[in-house]
Length: 260
Image (cartoon, rainbow, N blue to C red; front, side, top):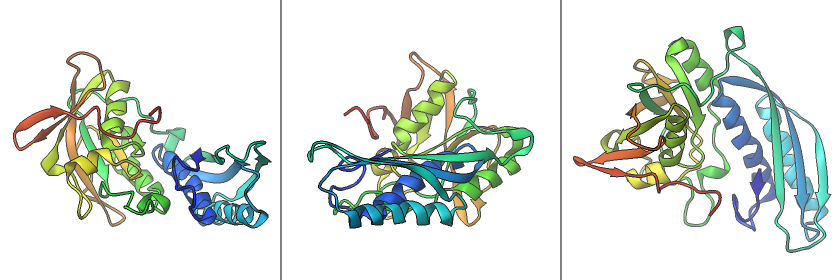
């Protein structure tokens, strides 16, 4: 879903909203090393939205789906009764496995000692105006498939970074009954970002994965960085800690919490 006022500004361009709604779902498909084939979208809009606004939203959905060989093939449009209700756009991507034997990568499979790695760079997805990279980013579809082909069974779990590495690494760890330890000095930060932004800002839409051996340093020109390891859980699984200048601290409280 994209909830206007939660995932994008209330006054955001409707074409950009439609584009993000498709891109963030394509990123989920990428995290499974799958290939998208079609898009379905449903929108529930405030009655204050104009026909032209809805047309631009549709254009963003339609054009983005086409750009990634996942054309918009159907859906639904409705309006709220109250003008104060939030606009909601829900997108479903139909996809097929891209790997042999119909294999797809899930978030479950990490074991103690596995490496934790990420594509691209992290942090600063939301700029001070409320815009930023979170509105237009490349879903790592081809990179994920290439990674899975190169690592084979040594790629054991993967998801995309939508809520921040601090939370999403915890999800990979918890799925295996583990904890995750990250080294701050290894984090591939975007310019102007420190380690806190890199693990906490969220909406980077990079691949975060567990693997049994060193991953390639580059995929289609996109850097790949090992940022930590999975370890046996000390208590409740899913804890994430980071080493900063020799000091280890918990970062489980960082990242995006949807219930907040």
